[in-house]
Length: 153
Image 1: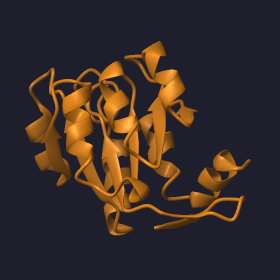
Image 2: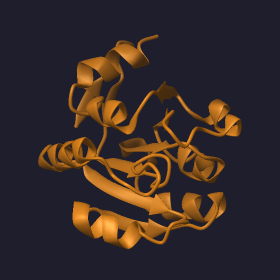
Image 3: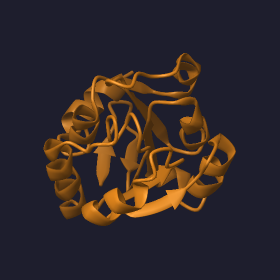
Image 4: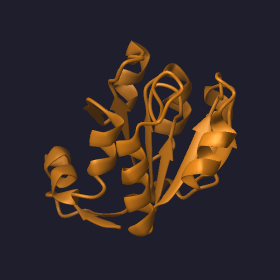
């Protein structure tokens, strides 16, 4: 999806890489609203990729239910390696924890979600946007004018 930034740069985002715990899911559960937003993003032809350390052991079942791709990465280096198979100029990363730094560093821009499980302060210097929830983060790619405004210089 083409996103026009106010500084006349056009972003062509194809991939949205998500962390699972504390990002896509809170305390192991994906909200119904998030499920609806994931379906809408897929209808808009975004590829949704879950890269998870799978600390709760439920990543495969969540990915299957949402019909999204799943890659495992048990630490930041492994997650970095997984995201590198996607064009970094067409990939956005969303997460909340130190393990996500590897994905943040390999995306055109990154978003931290500040939800019930919190964020680790080490990620602050690696993210471009901090937003209250996964639902709010996903909506940025549906209502791209909100994203354009946030990226405005």
